[in-house]
Image (tube, rainbow, N blue to C red; front, side, top):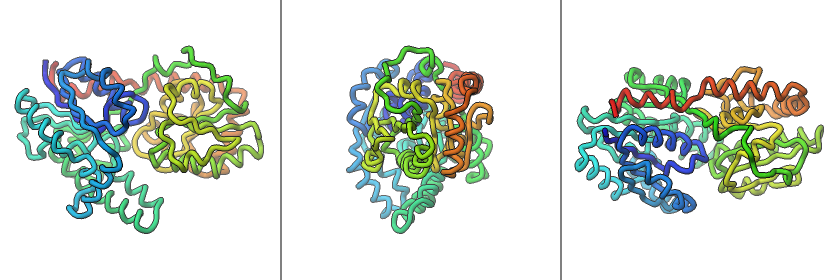
Length: 400
């Protein structure tokens, strides 16, 4: 079997957050057709328990731990070296040595880099015979630009600097790649504008959704203990700043407008590692669950799912999963980019509190909601398939 070196910045399991969902399905696809040599990091001690579940998919697995606090200190060296801070955060000599050794010993000439930060472990000037496919997923540099727009003072300067330095690195990495992949046409087109001389090497490879797993007909644990007869749910990693900003804005700006009209509304923030800012949102109308083993019972119990993101890039898996669970989604324009559902099955709105509140109230009290929800699941099933998306990889890595 053809060998592929797969480098991912986080253990591709469990598939419970945006990047891990995509990296896991990439791994599953590769493992079904190629010998996979996986080099990855673990930055959450909770994830060590999943190593044994990944091993059967790999011919060889190399894992390095990351201490987030120490890594942030390492990242600051980028201010001295002129690098984007993202690179020294992941710099690891043992990973670099393993990559060099395994490529030489196994004669590997097919490499899949997941996330631009992992590009530093592959020689950008290596021979053209090496197929270096880089899955950028999103244009991360633009995400840092969005962050800078929401900050002020020193934070704004640091984020602007990161946007500029990371964009330069992304373009350099793409110039050395056989193909650069992005999660949507919108992301691919944005990068084409940034790297105008490389447009023929830039492709969109959309995310999919596991319709068997996210199935509204499946049996779930009881959620009878959940409060409120009008349940609004948000799912996501709650240590990710874009999610933190989204739920904070919704809880402070939109929810009060809802409860004034409909006092039984209850907002569930479902996701692991909630920051102190998120925990402080807890109230008689807000539940912060923390880490849950399965988000599906909460989605199944929801009367409505919201995606109030004001900072976003790429495709939001949380939206696809809710639609696959036959739920109506009310989301911002940023959250719906790359998915672009028709108005008949979901609401795409400007991030305006009054408009979002009015729309949510109308949907909560709609008599046509169940029909529309089933239409959402059917629409997602027709357009977001992992199997069809991932077949693109074979054109660069050749026959198994």
